Length: 98
Image (cartoon, rainbow, N blue to C red; front, side):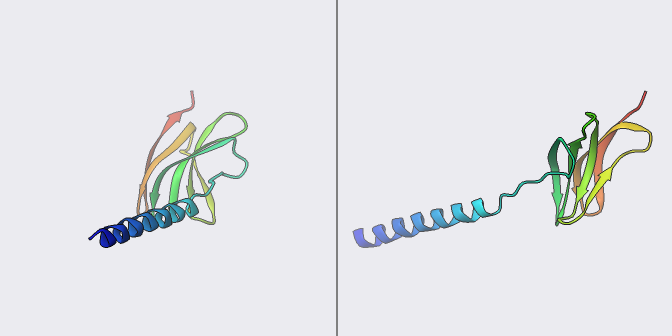
């Protein structure tokens, strides 16, 4: 019985270590080119949406598909932000320019 319990404990420790290695391997940096900061807000499949700040301090939304960055800016707005994505639908908000 003690031998079986020891093997179960050893297997559990090995699984925990292996899962920790896998979790570490998936971390990556996400930086919109030319931005002062980038914040991810939502993921759907390979698409990530969020917000970034430019050099002038304005905030913009973005869509990143793993290769291409697309800026999301509501026409006539001073700031736009993307807060979530589901399939091809993006939700967020904007602030009118005064």
